[in-house]
Length: 393
Image (cartoon, helix red, strand yellow):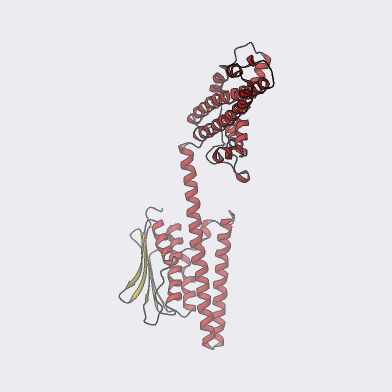
């Protein structure tokens, strides 16, 4: 009983009922004007040319969203498209929807008129009227039984309306819903959004994490050095690193705000790798650098991701190994970019990291069709990445 009563208390049941009766209201006007003219086949015939109009699909989609699937807080149901027909397949699906809707309208409209009339006749017979005014009252005959059966047509009507509303909603989702092409486009857009969010998360992790690590190392070194000149250099390095981190943060926030002021090209590339290396040296790390090949000719996507890989590798060294010697090798040769950062594993060190930063190194390399390796090798911790150049150009 509770399962049956729940739809009766739902507002969507009555909005669907209204949706079913709207075409009947339109055609009832024609009946009022020319009741002797055959009009029953006309709606089904006119549905074909009407459904082929692109704007009809938009009108029907909006109406179905508002009345068949009213979303919470005004949100439209994505399973029903509210857009003009873009292809002939969409137009013929709209024609099929109009035919189905008219059939359901005829069924719901007839029940809406006939069943309440039957209830009225049953009540009239129970009150003493002639029992022959309705086939059911004529069949029942007994007045007290007519009174007992009077609510039955209304219950049948409510159940029929709920059923027709469910069928209409299912038909709308199938015939007015997005086409396979639209679904694929929506999926691709959603995938692009997720990839962009993942990239922004990596950008924030790499940039802000690197800046904080450098600041902590510089501040610790300045506190223990007891040298005014060294302290001044450390504070200058902290200032420069903080300024760079703020620029990166502003750029990422501008992307989140969809601001065109800072294009993708504004992201740092390997041409600016000296900034990272100087920042590491300022933290007390001895950096041995070997660069070969034309870095300025590396495609933008590869150079930008290579910069972030180098940044995370140096941050990982400072965070987990401290001020230890670091070897950096960057080579452009044979249509690929090779990047390697190596530091010794000392007994006193806390060990290398294995968190989201190094996972980000592997993700960045895989995103460009390359590969990355992180881990110990013969007493050293190595981060190496090989990024192809040929398919990026």
